[in-house]
Image 1 (cartoon, protein in one colour):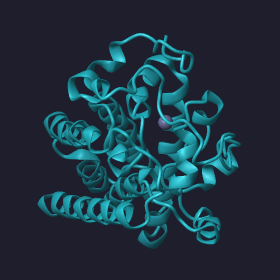
Image 2 (spheres, helix red, strand yellow):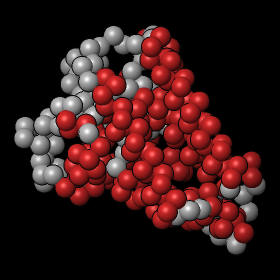
Image 3 (tube, protein in one colour):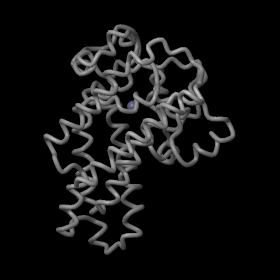
Image 4 (cartoon, protein in one colour):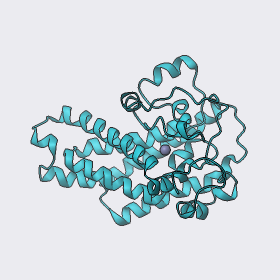
Length: 272
Ligand SMILES: [Zn+2]
């Protein structure tokens, strides 16, 4: 378990550093007035989330997978699936469950209030990929644990998936410009920053599309894919109206934001 935490932390710091470097090298060139002023809260949130997780469920999803494996629980062991098959199947099913979890968090008003805090970042960079409310992180763990036990996912698959999800979240929120040809290819394999940018548009029909975090296939399969925002990638307004000021990016404001009513202007009235 100690190795698990080290692997996750090393992967997280490595990918975050790579993304910050990539953002400096291949920036989109958009004006981002708040920039680093969003960072203290965006970086504090995953720390708080990790502490809460370790307090509530010290073993985490990987620990639960170890527990289930020792008892032979779940569908994959019941079917006698060999490890080479169980590994990719478990990663795929976990990614599919995160896709549906994300859709549910958009459409159930109380859950949208929690997830809305992530969308209320008025600018996108790698740190947005870390900005999730601790309660959302806890609920997400509960869903993940249920899938892990039902499936009998191998612990290595759960660890690989958690590292992958964390890395792709940092990548698909990063403020980087990818050449059009590379984008066309990359988008077939992984959710790219351009694809995920549509999801962060303030236009509701656009935010309610492109729910994938890691694999882009589920959006195609379940009809939620949108190639680009109507206003164009660089023209799309990011965030949630009413929560765009520097003051609203403070940690205390973000933690309490789910309790706040609807934002003053138009957009997401789902959370009422
Ligand atoms: Zn979302």
